[in-house]
Picture 1: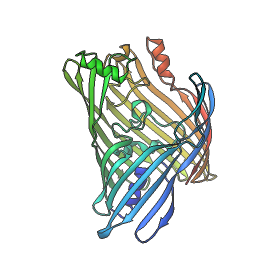
Picture 2: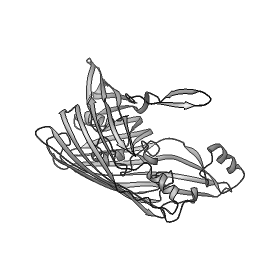
Picture 3: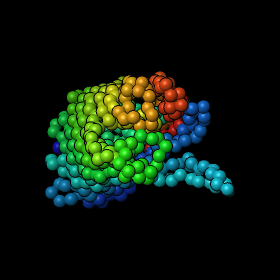
Picture 4: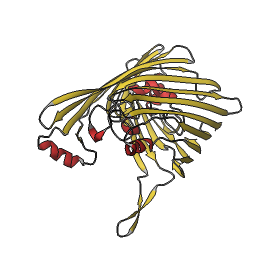
Length: 402
C-alpha cells in the first residue's frame, strides 16, 4: 500500500464526491481538518419556485500518528440547513415548526497502515459507492439510478451501498489495483401488511392474530466489495457487488427469504476538476434492492448512470448526464397496496449544466433536468403519486467549499 493511500482512503469515505478541507491543527502526532461546503440554490420544479438547501455539510477529520507506522483516523460529518425550513402548523392555534439544523451523515473511527491497509467502523460510504460515485458530480439532481440512494432516494444506510449504518470495512491497494470489502453488523426488524393505510403497531397486532396478510421482516447483515483499477493516469475501471437478505415470517408461521443483490461495473476517463474532457458511465443489475416512489419493493431492475463534462481554459464547465432505472412491468413482488400487475416503473432523465469555477472551492452553477420517466398504471391516483417526485426543473445556485 503506497504512502498516498491514507489520503485517498479518506477522500473516498468523505466523498461529496468533491472533497476539500482546511487544516486547523497539527503537531508532531495529531492533526485536525475541517471540511464540507455550503450550497444554496433557487429551484423551479413541480410548478413551484423556492430557495432550498443544496446538501450543505460540515465535517471534522482527525488523524493521530501511532507507533510502528500505524495511524488512527476518525471522521464526524453533519448535514446542515443554512437556508432555514420553517412550517406553519395550525392545531387550535398557529405554531411555527423548524426542521433540525444539524443531522448525522457520517461517523467512523479506524486504523490504517501503509502496508496492511485500513479498517474502519461506523457510518461510512459503502464499498459499492467506489463503483459508481464518479457519475455523481452533478450538484442538483443526484443519479438515483446507480443503486446508492435506496428506499425511495434515502442515503443507502439500510443495505450499506450509500452512507451505510453500522459498517465494518477494510481497504488496501497493490500497485494500480485497490479494493474494499465490508459487512454491516446490525439487527433490523420491521412489519409489513397488505394494506397501505396501516401503522406499524396495528400491523404487528395483525401478525399476532395469525393472518398471512401481516409479515415480520428481519433484514440484518449485508456484505459488499469493490475493486478499482487505475489503468492509466486518466482511465479507471471499477466493479463491485453488495448483498443482503430479507427473512420473512408470515402470521401463520410460514417463512420465506428474499435476497437483496446489486452488482455492476464502471468506466471513467479524466478528472472532473481538471481542464478538458471527463466521461464516466456505470451499469448495474439489482434484485429486491430498491423501492419505487411510493415504497413498493422492486423485484428486478437494470440501472445506468452517465456523466460527460468539459472544462474550458476560461473556467467554464459544461456537463451532460443521462440516467435510467428500468424495472419494466410486474416489478412488485408482493400484492401490497393493491398494486396493478401491469404497473410500469422506469425512472429516466437528462441533466444539462453550466458551471463557472471561480476556483476549485467556489462555483456558480446552472443546471436543468428534463424528465422522461414512465410510471404507467391503470390506477391513475397511484400513477400521479409515482410521478410526484419526478419532474422537469431548473436551478441556479452557488457552492462554497471549505
